[in-house]
Picture 1 (cartoon, each protein chain N blue to C red):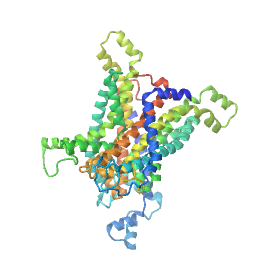
Picture 2 (spheres, rainbow over the protein chains, first blue to last red):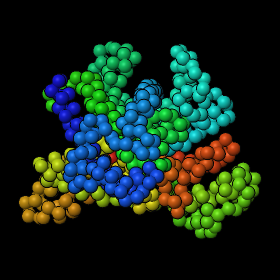
Picture 3 (cartoon, rainbow over the protein chains, first blue to last red):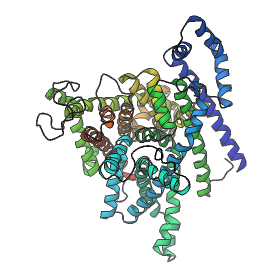
Picture 4 (cartoon, rainbow over the protein chains, first blue to last red):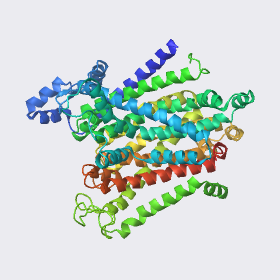
Amino acid sequence: MLSFISQRVLKGVIVLLAIVVLNFFLIRLAPGDPAIVMAGEAGASDQVFVKQLREKFGLDKPLPEQLFIYVKGVVSLDLGFSFRQQAPVAKLIGERLPATLLLTLTAFAISLMLGIVFGTFAARFAGTFLDTAITVFALIFYAMPIFWVALMGILLFSVTMDWLPSFGYETVGANLTGFSHAVDVAKHLIMPAMTLGLFFMATYTRMTRASMLEVKRLDFVKTARAKGLGDAVIQRRHVLRNALLPVVTLAGVHSGTLIGGAVITETVFAWPGIGRLMYDALLQRDYNLLLGVFVICSAMVLIFNLITDLVYRLVDPRIEFAS
Amino acid sequence: MRQFWKSMFKSPSGVIGLVILLLAISVALFGPMLFPNSPWRMVQRPFLPPFTLSTVPLGTDALGRDVFAGMIFGARVSLLVGLVSTLVALVVGIPIGAMAGYFGGRVDDALMRFTEFFQTIPSFALAIVLVAILQPSIYSIVASIAVVSWPPVARLVRGEVLSLRTREYVQAAIVTGQSNTWIILREILPNALSPVIVLASLMVATAILLESSLSFLGLGDPNLISWGYMVGAGRTVIRQAWWITVFPGIAILISVLGLNLIGEGLNDALNPRLSREGR
């Protein structure tokens, strides 16, 4: 178990390093000489100043050395400096990370729970009206672009019915504390989390349904039935447990999509997470910040994949840890 | 082939999907002929609600541009980007997967590590970064979508090739001294194609979603109107003019839905073994 974890962590670190190197070259690909861009943003672009900036940020050194400096910086959590926001990139991301984690994890939990419930119902009543209804809804949710779902949510629940706030993380200027603050944040969270979760809910519904129908035909289910076990017990203990394995795998595969969806959701709802930060960086062509967020997103996906891998092995006793 | 169309027409989802796709393609091809006016042109007063004037059935946007015309011209961009980026992804992914599966060993290891690397990177974030750095244009959008969508193709093709490689007719071709290229192109790939076709139809749908999301964030080609751009532009005035965001979104929804249905229909028709369930 321990050797498995360390092996996976090591592999993750290697991939992350590769992403950092890729990132370095992407920064170099970005239009404009960084020193001139910086000087322009600082409001002074005479030759001496540009040269000073070059020296200060090591831009006059040969490329491999620059790469080494960059990688060393990222390893010690120095992701560069955002000249637009006048703050270190790592600090900006650190401030925004909790909001993104709150949003993505809530959306993930909602979509997994509802997806499994709906998928189970559809499989249980396969061929009936209920199954058709669930399948059709899943198909439609699966085809809706997230940004549009978000806007339709705002149109329906904020503009028309005035039930939920349409933007932000908390009511500005309300200065709520304790429980009432939590309620306020939750109110702001419902729509973004549902928006982000809807697509994944549709995916998990389809997957659970297909997987349960597949498992249902297997021999051990027949055995359980022959033993005289009740239908509910068979569904829960035999079918669902085995049918969930591919769903867990899918959850791991989808972690990258979840982050991508968060960028859009946070942008529409002005949710103060790293996705919104990425959008701001994009608008201002703040490449240091943009690529910093990109590295952190990749790291989050790697960590999430590691967790789903472990969960998979816990759920499926057939796989041994010594890989 | 006839068998294929027969089973395709038997699955209701396949038929509905085909009808939707044909409709979308004909709108993209012939629509602009019926609406010769540029979708960027101001035709009426701004914020004209839909269903009030028959000349502008879906109303106008914040600058008085025809929403319906925008949707028709947008169909071109969405379908074109979806199809071309999928083609590019296939052109990249199929050779990589075929080589990995056919040669095995170190080649396989190296190529699959490379593929896994690209699969780990969050795809939408990478697409955003690439388009931002290469500057938004239809080429950079197609390239970025292709870069983030080839890995599943490579993995699928590798798996297929791996199992086909051990078949007797392939072994026979090896024994008769055919070149590797010949064996891969003529003996193996044609038999590995059907799951790739299913995947490709779903990839076009994903590509359309990706393109619209990029355009929504303001990373679309500034010279081409697209559905994502229209929704993005209508977003700021959603409280006054719901129609600017609602209609282009429905267009995206219907096209993506159609392609997903085609994918399901193709799956039923090409892998009958897998699809007997639940009906």
